[in-house]
Amino acid sequence: MELRNKKLTHDEFFKQREEVLRQWPTGAGVNLEEAAEYLKKVPEHKQFSKKLRYAKENGITLAQPRAGVALVEEHINLLRYLQNEGEADLLPSTIDSYTRQNRYNECEVGIEESKKAGRSMLNGFPAVNYGVEGCRRVYEAVDLPLQARHGTPDARLLSEIIHASGWTSNEGGGISYNIPYAKSVPVEKSIRDWQYCDRLVGIYQEMGIELNREPFGPLTGTLVPPSMSNAVAIIEGLLAAEQGVKNLTLGYGQCGNLIQDVAAIRALVEQAEEYFKMYGYDVYLTTVFHQWMGGFPHDESKAFGVISWGSATAALAGATKVIVKTPHEAVGIPTKEANAAGIKATKQTLNLLRGQRLPESKELKAEIELIKAETKCILDKVFELGNGDLAVGTVKAFEAGVLDIPFAPSKYNAGQIIPARDNNGAVRYLEFGNIPFTKEIKDYNRQLLEERAKYEGRPVSFQMAVDDIFAVGKGVLVGRPE
Ligand SMILES: CCC[C@H]1O[C@@H](n2cnc3c(N)ncnc32)[C@H](O)[C@@H]1O
Image (cartoon, rainbow, N blue to C red):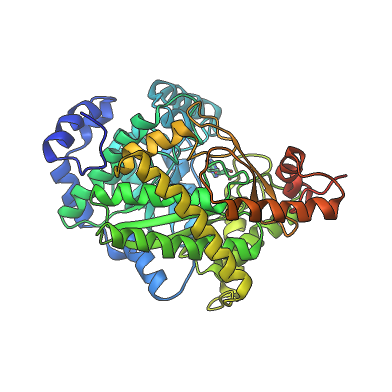
């Protein structure tokens, strides 16, 4: 069947579902009607969509950690600790890397090794291997909404299992969980697979169960210009809406300049709403701001500085949710104590800033307009390449380098754009690759980088990008020459 941005028919979906549920033995434990009955019993305070609505309507920014370990009991202890000690507002289950690659055999080995070692030998929770029974134990053990967070190009079986288990949100998308996470998964394949995941949510929606979907905003988390990440977020939002998703959280990864980060969230909301309206989708939209996704300082006190700065930006931007980092970010998977500390520092900052927003200024307005103009150039070309079909256009846009994610591992990503910070730390385009920006937009980006070059007494060059990549880990935002 030709790739199309078209809601999967019931026949198309249920025919594919037979193969999906056979991918691993635990798939046999998924029964749609039984799962719907189970989901209908999820109390409001454990429904992602309800808690996000409440936060948006009350101008509150919620705090959510990442967390996942190999064994069910330990994972439950971890989540309960983050709920009770960490005061998390929303809970994750970060899924391990083998599951993300559908390598469930290796998950089995990792589970056994973890039992022998008495510690987690996987970097997340292997939800598929535990199946509905194990995932329901996790859901029933906590008292907050639960979401699957991962990086899975083919998340069809994972999505079936976690939703059937009462987990009321799923992160990911056909671009955002492929290009930054995989080397050789064709864009067409991951778009199709995520159409399935979204259609599953749409089918639950038609049964009166509102689940939340959250495309992964930060992408590579390495100097991704806001217009590129916003373009991807809006594309994944539209693709999800076509499959019947009604509750969407679009995201963005902190870049570090306050004006630009606030502008990115404001532009994302304004532009996404414009596109949903234009295409007639009735979507309840919320936003998620990811605390700094790049290199972290080793020193835990300095790490708390980065965590608090991301929290403050999220609050001032009015994001519905902020994803929390921990003081162990520079070293690896955090202990539960370090994870809880990250959440508490975040919530302290959010509470101190409750109700405050970065006021409209000419600089903020200009940055919002610039981001929207850049994003429009990209999206217009995507639709043109697809002759109006967004799914086809997305595949062709990656082939043409119109969608191009900096520092992505995927061989389907052109990798021609080069980002670098301007003198105020805002992320600009140093090389445009094949992105069809207007001359005015290109000249403005170049002018801002020339200002930095003049200040630093060096030419605009790739070295600026390299210096910027290491800067935050060294305690600064802009990578000044040594
Ligand atoms: C896009 C996600 C990257 C971030 O996701 C964190 N992360 C990954 N796996 C786990 C885990 N099992 N528990 C807690 N945090 C985790 C990393 O540290 C990084 O910040």
